[in-house]
Amino acid sequence: MLACRDETIPRMDTTQILAEIDAEIESLKQAKAILTGTTLKRGPGRPKGTPTPVKQKRKMSPEGRARLVAALKARWAKSKGEK
Image 1: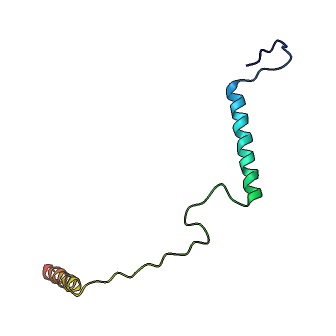
Image 2: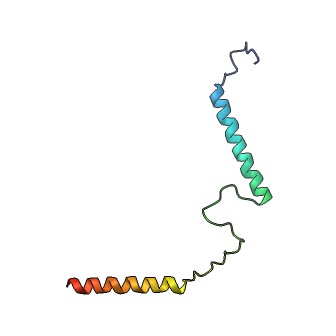
């Protein structure tokens, strides 16, 4: 660190110097992003240009469908029997 004997030059606090350096770095990053055509901040979701994934339909086995039908019939029979 340089010794400053001349009191006309104001001394800056280290935290203030670091804050100014950080602000300058951020502005340089923004300038670089503008020049290269990239963005720094990204929103939520998938980036543009990526294909939408194709979802496969779920297939129910005949046994599973039979169990579901039986459970629904039992539920309806129970609700009709309570009235």
